[in-house]
Image 1 (tube, one colour):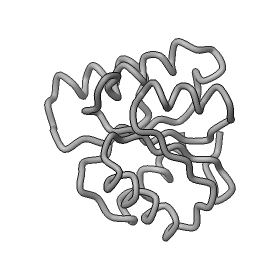
Image 2 (cartoon, rainbow, N blue to C red; image 1 turned 120 degrees about the vertical axis):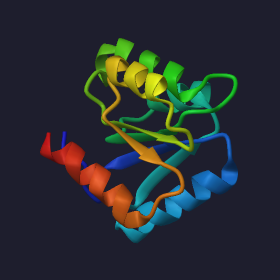
Image 3 (cartoon, rainbow, N blue to C red; image 1 turned 135 degrees about the vertical axis):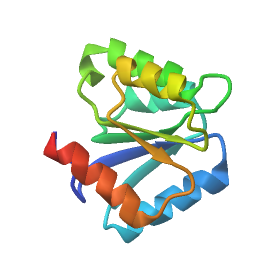
Length: 127
């Protein structure tokens, strides 16, 4: 599944400020169809209503964190191949390995620039 400017993107983070920043970066990169969710449960509800081409999710959220969201996404055959970028301010190697096993497409460390985000998306497109 190729991610392009017409792809529908879901940004998941419990911080409205972070969602706003990521939306701004995506808009700078030319993406126009961007939705937001404040936690994993809200993201799953949106995903059941609309077909997304990319999910960008924070790791640390309550009540459902990014890892739990990723696991639920990968367990659903409809979302099994959905590109999923995990955002985190941490770099715990155990968490990264756990997410790799769960099927994360890519990681991005906060804070990040539009260029770094585009690089991650481009890399997913190459796979």
